Image (cartoon, rainbow over all chains, first blue to last red):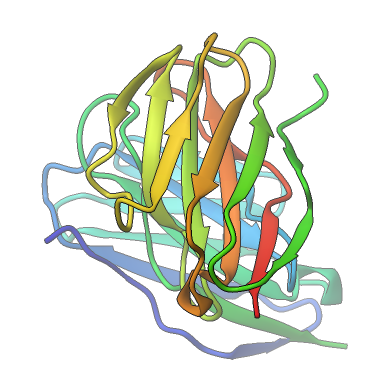
Length: 112
Length: 112
């Protein structure tokens, strides 16, 4: 059974702080990892993808991947109230673009 | 690049009726995916196409669900004899080969 686990939250952080979101997955052979942001009532929006161990930075977002420990994380620097949303971790468990397996998401609340 | 579009955005139907949803992918994308999302859960994969070929359909929830992509462009998802448990957000995503998946706005189905 391919599984992706996330803490459901809510995770509350003050405005300007760093928000840290974590995700673990069940298959050591997994290849591709994605973070989606989903506002209430809206569809998921891709914000980061990561394929290799280490860090990948894009603006205020940093994705971190550790395949040996089977976890992937997302850091949001200088958090803003507009970052308040549910963050979904998604994993492609096979090589190639097969369907994604999603976690249940972590709800983030940034307090002004 | 106009993004993934889905129609209708909302559908209310009575139990036992058939419904059909349409998805238009990003124009150059050859892969198209259908997911279902219920409250508090991450998207759940249903089926996907590469061009007009349906490569995975074992995850369709029952034989009441079917999908087509007749000319490798738009796709339709049909649910026959709807049940109240079918109420959910139905999401379509598209991708180019092995790249990231981008979601449309979704179709919210309510079965009364």
